[in-house]
Image: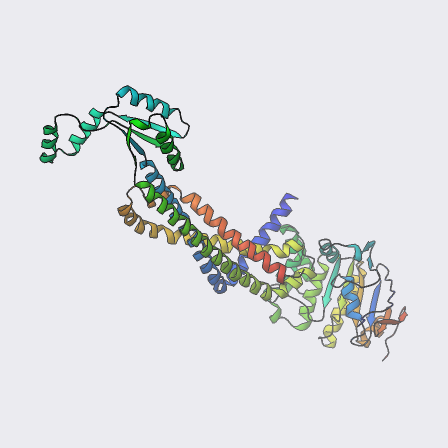
Length: 306
Length: 212
């Protein structure tokens, strides 16, 4: 029985491949549209991966610095630190003492003798102790800041510095979601076009083999034996399109990758692509095969009367 | 429009029956009903002990493997050789390769085409094409052979070769139903003749004649 099924599968596959080859000019148009569709989906995926990485990097840089007035004792600040650390949303709290702040300030401005001189003239340390707070999620900062401002330490707090990155991140995520929305719509349109074109190709195949189909019925071919080759044809379109897309993408990414790294140096697109090439190809193949099979099924439903 | 009306026909196993009548009398429709190409709006068709009416879509192919069919226009695949056309019927039915290699040459020599195995249909004469078609019909060792005007396009000599092949199949045990309007065949066969007109059976005789 198993052998019988294998024999039938082999014959169905051969017949499907045959008709793919016989229609190779019509097939090439189908494959072109599929390549464009799969390529767009892949690009969208890569852009999304990169944007996520940029966002994550930026989020890492966001924190809130709380500066305490000069007369606040170190003990008091440490007590506040401990209290903050008990809050669930807080990821980490870093204490920067007056002395550390001064040291860092001097280090930052060692090439500017004027500032160093005026600092010396001042005699005392003018810098305030501070706590750098990192939240687990970017949405938590508002709550943390308002907790501090309404707490019993409010009078010891001089300023709360909410880094400007917040605005950049908000802007970036709105750009990203707009890109995704726009990308999704164009992908949907292309998917539709790809299905229509593939559907039409399979329809032509069905039409041109109608005589053969009639004879197959006559000599007692089972229904799936007649349908099988058309599904195989759809699968072959998808696979060939996926392979072509991958082949086209590889040099393209090698070319673009250094240009992206110039802007955002934490991103290395080509190494990401090489590391995930198998997954990407799998995704492309699944999309291609899915498109092909869906189109075949529609065409058969519509035109293959068994 | 009604193609067939009040048809009540019983063909015994191993019988050779000629179905005659002018064009449009309903001969082809009757045969198409028999192989499940069309479904009756009323009544029942029973092949062996199976009612065709009760067969599902996916069971139909198995019925067709028990019935060999021969048509006036041969219905051969133009891109396949004589050998491949016959092998195709076996492939489609899921026969394994070894069986195909054994059976096809045997069938080809039975229809007298062993030398033309690798010829394409367009390289064969009408009679040879029809013999390929008969070879294809008999390759499943069918219980029933249905021939719809198989000699319609053939000259008298080829006509007789085809009829003799059908007789040979009948001798081997197959029930043969031959639709034709060639009265010379029918009259010399001296077998059962069923005459149809306007969708009805108007005459049914053992060792009948067809006189028009």
